[in-house]
Amino acid sequence: MPTFKIDGREIPFEKGETVIQAAHRAGIDIPHYCWHPGLSVAANCRMCLVEVAPPPGRPAMMLNVLAYDPETGEYVDQQKPKLQPACQQMVSEGMDIRSESSKHVAKARAAVQEFLLLNHPVDCPICDQAGECRLQDYWLEHQRSGKRMRDEPVHKPKAQVFGPTIVYDAERCIVCTRCVRFCEEVAQDPVLSVRERGNVNEIVVSPGRELDHDYTLMTEYVCPVGALTASDFRFKARVWFLRSARGVCQGCATGCNAWLDYDPRNQTVYRHRPRENPEVNKYWMCDAGMLDYQRNAENRVTDARIGGEAVQVGTALDRAAEVLRHAEPSKVAVLLSAQHSLEDNFALLELAHSLLWSGAARRESLSASRVFSTGRPPGKGDQILRHPDKNSNTAGVNALLAPVRAQNFAALSSAIDAGAVTHVLALGSAVDAGATGADARVASLGRLQGLVVMGTWDGPLAQAAHVFLPAASWAECDGQFMNAKGMVQESEPAVQPAGQARPAWKLVAALALRLGIAIPWRTVDELRTALQGRPLNSEAAKRSVQPGAVS
Image 1 (tube, one colour):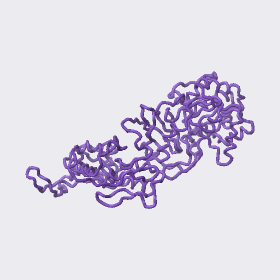
Image 2 (image 1 turned 30 degrees about the vertical axis):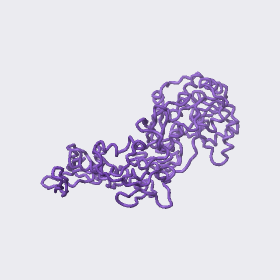
Image 3 (image 1 turned 90 degrees about the horizontal axis):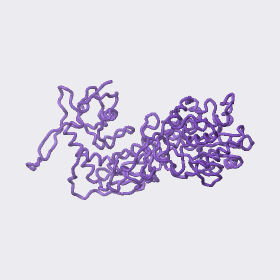
Image 4 (image 1 turned 45 degrees about the vertical axis):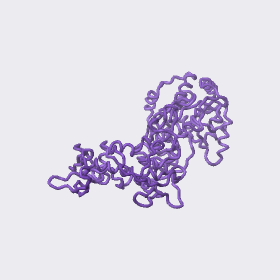
């Protein structure tokens, strides 16, 4: 692989890369505002200027400049090399780039910083970007001096509502145009543009429009300063109090990689941010995914219930074991959840095989007729990231059962109506009952003699449950999820389980002990070791999910 130098360090590069791309891949920071690895090059902020040393035997390209001499009080002619924006400068073999080692670059970056801050309001204490603002970071790294302009700064519109999710402050804007390019190039809705020129220009929304496409929150996320703020996060938390957990978005089957930001002091999740993964979501997330963190707290059921009355978890587990112990094994069904992790679904399947189907010649044949699966109903998809399957683990459930496939909730409802199923051991809360006859299918749950539910949120299953066991959400426990491409991805816990909630696989283990069934795993690592013994047929899983997933 060819190489070039940055401040004397040999850096490999690939054909067609720019200086900043090669440096970014090598872990070298070149300061920048307008450049983003997922967007086109604008080269308008000039913060990434570098000095390109001339080849041996050739003179450097020089510029004549006027420099102020403080001793004489006059301007004198000087020369300096012509600096190049690293985001636009293509790399060639043997090129010598000077970034941190060039006094001309240091002076230029300080001047750019001072220029950007001339009209910038000093409202850092109330700015949501404080703690993550590149203006703050780069001032410390590349300027460390006050601005010399004493004139009244230019005033522009503040707190402009761009749409349902975004508020714009034109005075903070440095017009890097990241938001404009994102809307046009990624969201494919060029609703933003730049108005006016010079120190009075600003970002505006197209006449008669709002910023209301499905990726509006990403326009706020790509903003390097505090010009764009999200209504959802505005004035709610300070980022230096937040911690981040590596998560997987639960909004659809794409399985976007995300950061889950939470405050450990009050165990509250405050936001979802995209986590880079070139094979899944690149640098992006949709609005539905970035707001999906709210489900961790909304509509939760965090206490155990028997017949709708709150009880202790141990009491509910004892009652659940009694219900299952008196059930006729041939009429007990298992309802898996495409909203829960591989570990939760695997644990429930293992319990069912041990309790209900032991001694069967072929447990696959019994599984095919007695295992059902449900989740959230399908929704809107697109060719960017959004998948029509609004469940995070549909492929995982199908992979656990391959080569057979779980039946849907409509089939379970029919089996209940026919008397073939009298008891159900269910995982999850969401019910995809279909558009036609949905009420009647949900009503069939009332005809069950026993319904034991391990769920997280309120819903038809929780309301109909004879015994309800509160399960932890994905933000409260470790879990693996298989996306529509058949990729298994891990999500880390952020906050402690709410109320009496526990990871669903732990509830399964506790229930198994009460039923006298030996469970070979006590920790999530032991459970995953057992899960590895079950080969996941990802090809079958990918064929079974709805088409249309695009990374």
